Length: 219
Image (cartoon, rainbow, N blue to C red; front, side, top):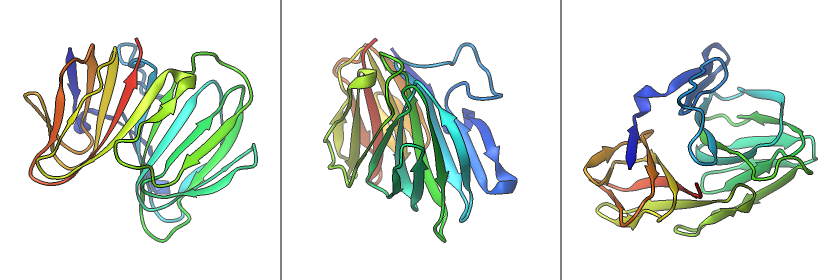
């Protein structure tokens, strides 16, 4: 079964006056929707836009796997475990909040920053925080997140190119850029598909190149 969710249906958030614009795919903060709390292990898929100099001041997280994908610009990350990095397009950043961690996320550059941040529920809460960044992850190389029983597939498709949808209990597809087709549905940038029991499906780029994030998850 496939359920398509359009970019325009996301919940708006953030603080536009402070240069922060957020779009939430799931129930988040003051936007509570009991019928849209999660899909598989995925708890949040947020599109964030930060103006130069804007950012999220130090704030806490716990019992959450946080994976960040930068679309354009550079994200400055600092956390209470002592990590300080700049995340760029093509990098995969993971912060395991575990029993508790605090971090700062800012746009310290002079151009707009756009990133997608995804939160997943760990199979075993608690423990010590952990951090990892993979620089320039290769196309079609899955990023394993065993703590949540999930794999992230990054696909950069040329015009007309097709890719198989992972066969899994739950697959979440998020289109970062470009125009794609999944079965009979056209998916544009910001659109998403939630697929239950995926079998033999393909995603194709239409009219130009496309960039897609796909989460492969257990039930």
